Length: 341
Image (cartoon, rainbow, N blue to C red; front, side):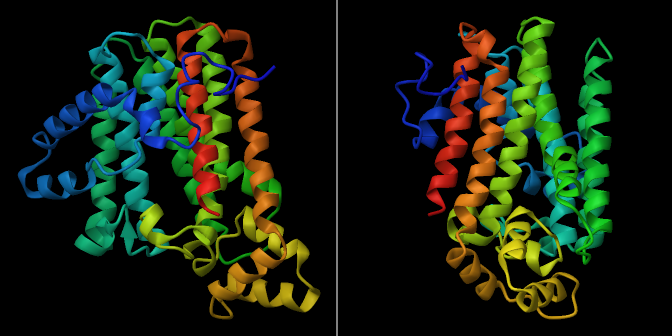
């Protein structure tokens, strides 16, 4: 039996649609994290402190730190080590966002100009590198090499996923397996390591940490599919970033895989020409076709499948306090998907 928000007594008081209520549980944790991250700005060189501060903002959803705190849950305040782990994964994530926005030529992130637009792409790519470097600096301050090794490996895997995706842009000669591999690397990896390290530094055993890691991986895959879906069905004011960047940049994502399979041969050829850059992207047309051909429910079914796999990994640990809170994040994602309609 899978673990769900409805099945967990600690979570039943929270509606699946009540996003703020779920994250209210870690509000004190996030306050500690925010204070810690602000302290880190002072460690950057004076010339780039304002740039680092611009990236280390408090407007994001902070899902990866939430995974750290929920996987390592205890009723008291978070330990200093848990806060530091959360900071490490958040800095790595912020660095990837800076680099993503450069490659996607995105204008808006979290409702304001991307670092690339504010400072220029050349400075932004180095800023992303500086954020990566500081994450590893913090990881190296643990008395064990475990955190540094895990985060270094995860960072390499995230970068590998982004490189593979970049090299495959403007080509339609990729398979669904290729797509799955990329999102496993570039998104699911940080979700996985967040849950794994959170559980370990929360004092849970190796077996639960491994189960939490499996949950995190599937949640990360589901979240990336949701993000790809939101690129077509979201509203910029709600999700806080530029829409249509996947089609415009020639990135073949799951909604586009599903659409391509349902188009006529001539329509398919036209879509492929857009993805390959031989024709201008027709975002409004592709969105209309997705609506007409029921692409939304097809992709949502894939999201639900990944969430179910993640919840099944935790089914043997239903009595563990952390499980209720991790399950709530599945419910949050389901609510985010529902909010797209």
